[in-house]
Image (cartoon, rainbow, N blue to C red; front, side, top):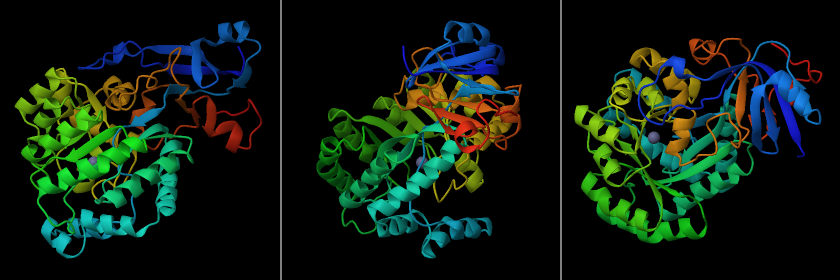
Length: 426
Ligand SMILES: [Zn+2]
C-alpha cells in the first residue's frame, strides 16, 4: 500500500451508510462515527473507523492531524445546474419583483432568449472559464460533483460549443462536472419549423456528434406547456434511449405531464415537480426515477416548493439540487437552499443530507460517491463544528473548512491556509 493519507481525529463522521435510496428517513438512522479517522489510498477511501486504531495500524500513512472539532460528511453532489452561461438576468429579477409579467419581461428583451444571446456571444474558452469560476465557487461550498447542462445554445453548433466548454472546464477544476445536453430547452426563435421538426433536427444532427465526441451521456428536455409537450418529446426520448443516452426531465414545474413521460421512459430523474399532484407523486414513488427538488427556483421566482415531504412519505426517492441558472435560480448555494427547503417542507436532517449526497449521486447514475466508506471516492468535506446538526442550522452560512476531492485537499487547511501542518483547527 502506498500513497496513504490519514485524516483525523474527526469529532463526528456522517458516513451516510445503510440508508435506503427511497422513502422517508429518521435522524436516528444516521450512522455517526465519533473520534474517527478517514484513511485514503490514492483517490479512494480505504477505511473509516477509530482514529486511535487507524493511527496505530497504519504508521506509514501521511498524517493530517486535526486540532479542534470537525464534522465530516460526503462531498455534496449538485445533480441539476445550468452553471455554464453568459450574461446576467438581474434586470429580469428586478422587473419580476416589481410586478412585471413573464410576457412583459420577454418583450423587454429578458427571459431565456436573453441568456441564449449572451451565451452565443462568448467564445468556447470564455464560456469554459466562466464555468470554471462557478465550479470553483461551488467547490469551496463543498460541492465535489456538479451536473452542468447545455441549453443556452439551441442550435447544433452552439450546443456543441457549450458541451465542449463544459468538457474543457472539467479539465480545469478539481470538482467533477457531469454534462447533460438540454438542447430541448425551448425551440429557438431563429429556427423556422415546428417543435417536432426542431427535435427531429437535434436527434439526427446533434446526437451522433455527442456520441462520437463523448460529450455527454445524458439527454434532458423541458416538458412544459411553454416548451415541449409530452407528445412532442416522446420520439426525441425514444431516439435518445435507442442510442444509449440516459434521460432526465424538467417536469411538472408549472403544468403536469412531464413526470409521466419521465417514468414512461425510465428517466434517471424528474426534476422540479412543483406542480405535481397526488397522482404524479404516487406514480414517481412506484418508479426508479428520482424526484429532484429545486428550491433555488422556488426562491428565485417566489413560487411553491416541490412537495418533498409528500414524495418521501409516498416512498419516493428525493434529491435536492440548486438549479443554479441566471434566470430563476441565481443564488447557486446548494446548502442554503436545502436548509430552507427543510424548514418549509419539514424534512429531517437525514433526508436533506441524503438528498444532496448519495441520492443525488443516483440521479447521475454514480455509485462511487455520496457515502464515506471503503472503496468510495475520497470526496468528503469537514465543517468546523462538533455537532452535525449545526450544518443545516446555519442555513448555508457555515462553510466547510476543508474539501477533499479524490484524495486531495482542494480547499482549506494545509494548502491555502498558510498554517502549520497539523495545526489547522477550529
Ligand atoms: Zn433546470
